[in-house]
Length: 237
Image (tube, rainbow, N blue to C red):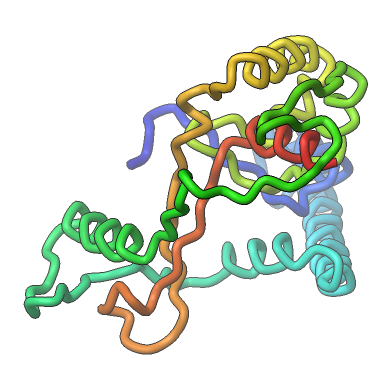
């Protein structure tokens, strides 16, 4: 759904120089109000030339860096595709075909829940690890510097979880959010509970192979809270 007044996102390859030349092109046309005026023709050529160069340089760099950043490359390639692949309609076990997106969701949810691994929490193995007693974490030193360092290492293009906090935002506000996260992490460990948003996840079906109308031919990808992953990383280290 298109929201009225929403600005169109700038292309990822658009450089500062491109923006400056495009602005000059616009101002030149406003001044002379004639696209065939020599000044307008010149401004248009300069802007067009720089746009082609910027796009070409970006695409060349993306192709060169594909070994290190596959996600950015395929995200750009996908944005240029003229067709979109959607999941469904799906066929359930009774042979019925889903008619609405809600029915697709229910079918995926039923299949993904059926293959979900359920751990036996009453018989969990407890290893002899320093800092643990009877399977409980005794003490863990968490400070702001540690959290800022972790935030700086986040991948900016990763998706957020149910709390809608994306890495790009967390990185921008790392200095402001480091203290609240320190307090939150310590309180969570001390009380043995986590925020409800950390327990929720957005699940996206990714097609594997075979018939695209069968839920079993998709695998679930979960998008959990970045803050939760941050605390997990600190505990793991």
